[in-house]
Length: 383
Image 1 (cartoon, rainbow, N blue to C red):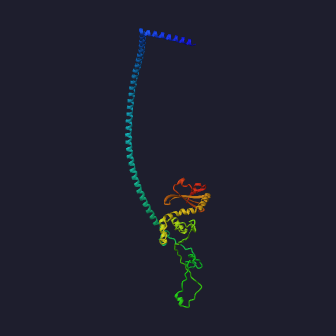
Image 2 (image 1 turned 180 degrees about the vertical axis):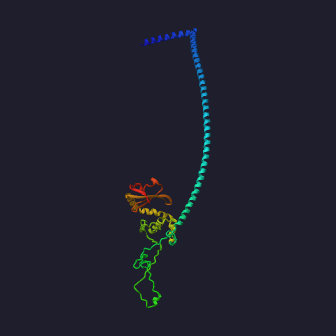
Image 3 (image 1 turned 90 degrees about the horizontal axis):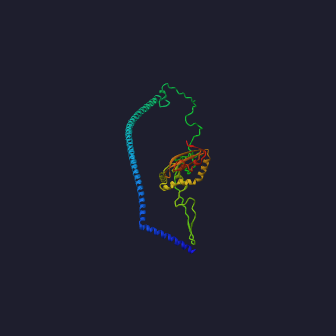
């Protein structure tokens, strides 16, 4: 096998050597150069012909592009002329519209002046007419005056009629009749009794004898007194634990100075029911107590919240009763709540239940949390 492969390799190499020798001989003789030159010239001529065709095509396309460009220039010039014409027409039309607008404004101003003048004349005529009507009413009233609608006596009226007295004479004197129970001032339970001493003439005349009859007359007056209750609680110290304790104070006695329920209720009613300002309420209380009690504005302002917290259960009960009521009246008004402007929604039912809701907004946001939000009966504005 090795010998066969070597033979084939030698044979191939011999053929290649022979071909190379022939090609070398051709190069040495110049035939190869001649063939290559001819082949090169043939390729060059083919390329020159191709270049000529391409140059002709380029020239043709260039000429076509110039033609197209000239056509576009012509079209653009035509469009430019058309655009200039349309712009000129639009400017002309705008000038005409502006002139028409100016003319219309002048006509409007003239018409307004005319209307104003007519209104003035109409107002003048109406004023004169009202004056004449008042004069007519006054004269008519003067003509229609008689003893029934004025102080003119009936004897001076024209075609007067004598008024007959249809009452029967009883012979009684005018005023309260005997046996009629009088309407006197109601006496109260006396808080102080004063027994007046006997007159001096009774003391010096033995003919006067004391009877069983006693005349009593009352003088009713009011007075304002300041009652101050001071609680004392001894402090006890535990020597082992260091704990300090004292007796518990009554309910409501928390701060060093506390105000009782009567005073708080008085200020609440004065500020709310009587619509008295906080400053006037403070000054009024200070004047009543000769300057002994001077309550701060903040406390009076917080009375509404304090009373509202105490009546929360009652308000919830009224709220539930209103939801079951067949008819409910509602209204909304403006008011100042805690110094700020608010909308107050009023809900009332025929049995006397009334609730007030202060809100910062109206509409759907305002009725949230009120009886109106969940009410299913008939609602209407209060008359």
